[in-house]
Image (cartoon, chains in turn green, cyan):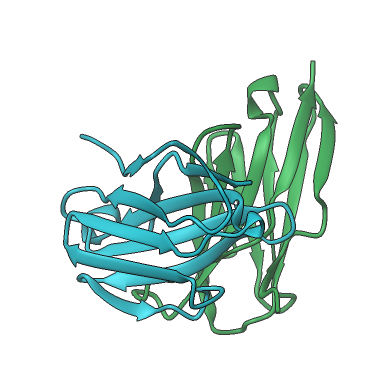
Length: 113
Length: 114
């Protein structure tokens, strides 16, 4: 049973436009969410996170939005750059401090020059 | 500061052979995770250690899989006997109070079982 779902396996966006990656979760006990970025032949690297006490967190071109009632989060990248082309994973953790993270299946983003 | 170190980076083995993957977490981190990446299931948590103790191994697929953490700086994931369907990328990750709620991944071990 997939508790964290990324229903779009791939996404193509033109350079300079907005990329929106979506993630849904089923477990209402999740209270901390992260996005990771993965290039081929490398390990995932941390991108941005959000706690359930917030509904938005911004870091430069990256913004994560959390809608707790819908159990949905999204990652916005504005403006998108070719170097953003990678696989993006969302992850969720419950009961802050347990550090057990459940990951989604990933979305492959391709930013077209 | 060194990140999470995994070995081997690539392993090709024959079906039925024993495979041992190794991980050195970031110094000072007290939580260690083993994940497996496949196309169908994405990053799948296999087992999670806290202070060298296995806390949750519910993701370990079968008894053929075992993991140990004999000390704070070393962990192994063993598959015996290996099968072709075990072919995947296996990631080790660690976290701790110094990293907040962020886990840091190694570069992965690419396993191919033929």
